[in-house]
Image 1: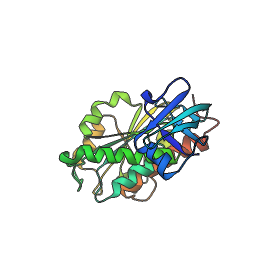
Image 2 (image 1 turned 30 degrees about the horizontal axis):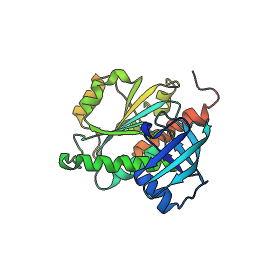
Image 3 (image 1 turned 60 degrees about the vertical axis):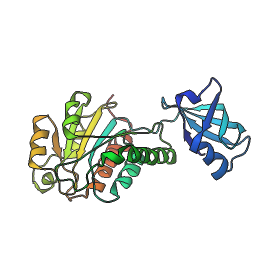
Image 4 (image 1 turned 90 degrees about the horizontal axis):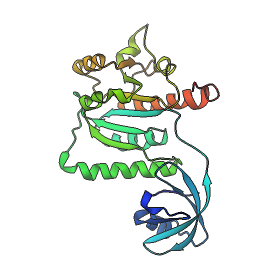
Length: 255
């Protein structure tokens, strides 16, 4: 069933209104008719099956039939701090990290980042990235749309009190006989914890960044025995978190 995310102001007691691009998609692309059913997501994470009771070229009105109880969100809150990658890799990272359950994606220019953030085009770019996240969230039936913003390592670390654990994916850990693994770090996490993981750019973290992480209680972890590309690292982290909390420990996750 097709899913649409809506604004809080779109909701009434028994109805929801859909306008803009989503209304166009319902009417022109999907060609839904009166009586057809769709799923509408409320900003607080709830979702309802709604029957279309009115539609025009610019708007659609749905009647709430049933509130759904399913929750597709990870049991922990995961923030990925992603160094800006070169080329068009960022669209891939945004789409796939959304599918894998990221809650927040923070973009930053690493010391060794080849790509640079263009402030003149920042609003346009962020709007496009948010659209990619919205569409990915609808496709994979998320309850919420993740957040995305552009910031800096220093600004992120200033907010360290918001997180229960902070890690950085460090390639040198993969070269050690005695290493710190992501899996071992996750053993110390419990439901509803907030997890932050830094992912470096193509050239890896600089010595300055490593020292900064260490000074701010951010622990290094390895992502397996292989050196991953920057666009693969976040996927590894999120897939590992999903397996750890939703599959491996789905019946024994600490409360």
